[in-house]
View 1 (tube, one colour):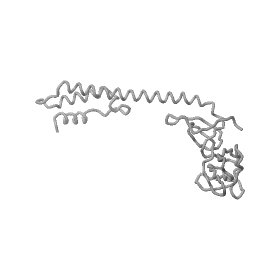
View 2 (cartoon, one colour):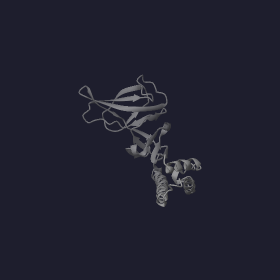
View 3 (cartoon, one colour):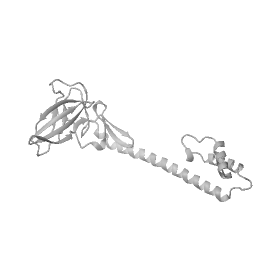
View 4 (tube, one colour):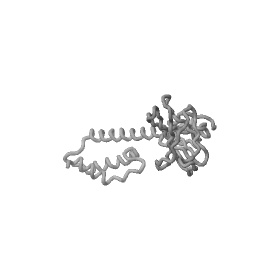
Length: 219
């Protein structure tokens, strides 16, 4: 081990622990203390050159500036996200269309089945929160919304909970496509999470705002 390496190791052990927020860029005084200890423990027959100290100082300063720059960028990101959040305030109370589970609490759920033009029959498949199929029914081929009444295959009302929907399209007696069905849900709240805007829907369901395909006043 060289004298410089040994001195650096000794300095690291002797220097106080850096504060939580800082790592390398938190406290310039810490660097000065480390440098002082390193000078005390250097080999007097092979002392460090002034240029070596200058390089260390320049390196530390560069790292410190990079840390500060990252902190400033993080702050700007949060501020920009908060500004974007205000743009979505008008969404609260509106109906948003998105491919997502829907919460059933006794009130029919409005769906927008993507029925292909070539289909001659369409089936709506409903699954509960555990992925179990609870309803399968044939629905009209007419374009527009479809109102799911919340009843299972036995004709009885299903319990309150989260349900997802899939459309299976048929042509000439054979299935040709299966696709998730977008649902209409009332927006209860707008949130900022990880720098992105999310919408809180009934039943605690949360989706990114970017997943919304359409927005309208409540039906």
